[in-house]
Image 1: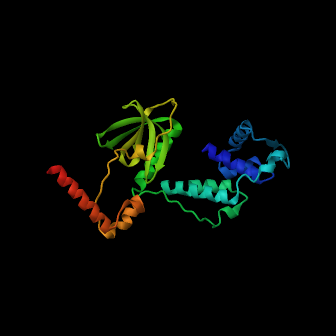
Image 2: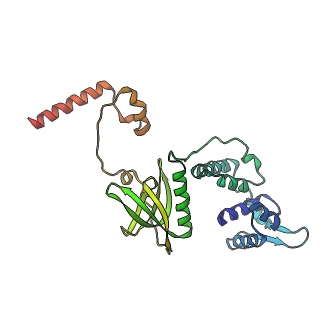
Image 3: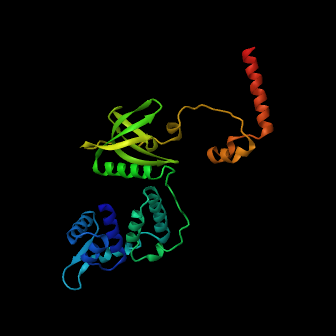
Length: 268
């Protein structure tokens, strides 16, 4: 992707006094013309890149700008690496770690051990989810209308959406987009999407609000349930709902007794 390459080139320029266009072309596996266009784009973005032709020449950043070459600390680079590895765990590739290698050119100690945070976002659904994620990313980047069969509490049916955001929330992946059926923005859970495909039409794009991912919005209903569990299930309750979600047997028995008494009053 172009943005990955631009970030990689900028990182190299911040860490090296000078680099040649052929060196950059070889590292990023593109031709020199592409590198020249990338350098122009960096200049347009306000990065003071200097190109010197001839023997001993090369590409560099103006001396005054090199005061900021320590753009990221080692700790910050490690945090970025943890995040990039988590994305690799989704699609089963090394794409983002390879990007990290390019970003950390000249700072090899960033890649050698020392990682204290490991994030694995891979799903029990395996390759099926990875395929959907890659397909949706492609649709978002190229403004392609996405078609799929969706399963919900109201039944299943075909949907067409303009996808804008791919979202990971708690333990699930979602796509946020404009639904032509509802004529509004909707959130769709990837595990309930099947038979994905692209419509022949591209969409122009529209002003897209960020989705409301609050607990009230995601888990609407507000129904309170009290249930009896065996003591052996305590660990699972704590895992899902926290240590304040249960009461010990004596307290529970008293609550049940009071509940039965209230029910008796109602039906007398």
